[in-house]
Length: 43
Image (cartoon, rainbow, N blue to C red; front, side, top):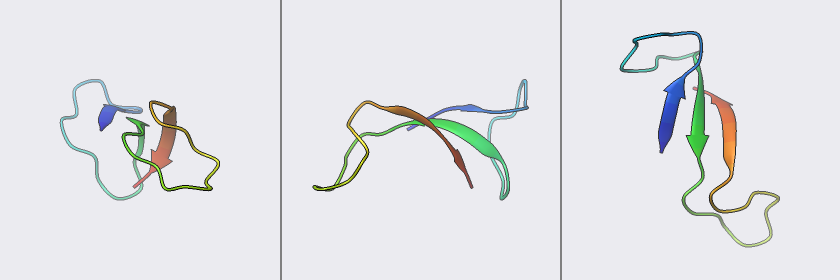
């Protein structure tokens, strides 16, 4: 789930190359990520 588009005050959508902050809802077994973790990702 996307929380915020970084570098944009009022952008509603992110485009290719944008950095966004997300919350992880589901993870696969044997990964380094955890549920409910907040991370930054590039689209």
